Length: 399
Image 1 (cartoon, rainbow, N blue to C red):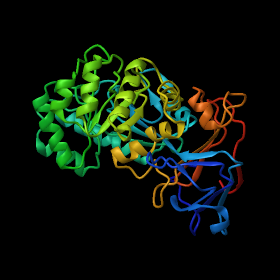
Image 2 (image 1 turned 90 degrees about the horizontal axis):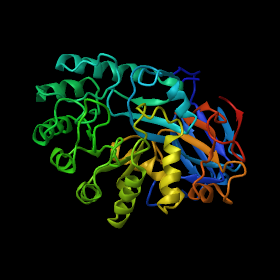
Image 3 (image 1 turned 180 degrees about the horizontal axis):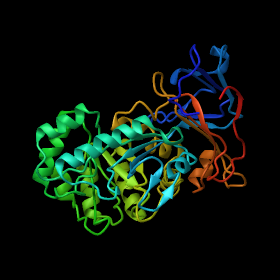
């Protein structure tokens, strides 16, 4: 059922019991001492031991059957267009397919693949507001798509950003994908956006498609965007010394994407670790793009960074959950009282190496997704895309 569908009278109480491992999304404390979680009307209200919690009156009861519960994964960098369709790769239901990879929230870095995308100021504002609205009003398979991300163009003034913010726009598309390609102008517009509560991301690296251009470290630093978009390139990465410079100088999001340079991703990870900045690492796919759609892209990044980057799997999952939540100021991605009841339940894949899900992921394997939940409602059960899990949770009552 769509999480936005009206419900019967009375509170909706979700109880998930028999949790084998609870990942919090908090990089400072990634594992919770808990085996039960309760949410009422889509918000987390209790986390702890089943014996200490009130399980009575559950409208939805899930027996986790000993599997791992984590915050729903967040894809920090997508390029949606409309609904669950992308003309970039002529694919339908790509968002639903990504839900089957454990992703419950997706953030637009610009609706740049819209055929005939308007680049005049009136048109780009209209499209951004419309995109924000249609994904607010329609969640493909329940997934939260935070869209309506205008690409800045020459001629925009402060009042344009106020108008966008007043209309509900909260993100800029990748700086550098439009006509603004100098740091001074970009900095002014990013500052206007920030003044009105709009976050910004900057394209980093070589051109992504014909017509785009190089954005080097100097422009990234001069622009001062909130997120260094695909610091490992989308697709082509900057030289190593520039990546290191960005890691040293930037105080906010260092975004690593699936559709980038994997060697540069590991350089970013290792540099951030040396600098004590692992809390700034966030993950995206940067799809749909020339590489297509990656339903398991976020899980693949978690596994790759954990295994090749020698990071504990529970920490790597924070890159895809709590780190992004905190950098992006979201109410998802953390197992914490008051946050949205958006979860992925998963287990070690059948016959995969490693005695536990964490060992298996750190050995480079994908987990099997058994269920996703958004706003306290089950949105998918056993994944059609991941390898089958050893164990799967059971929906005992409710929906």
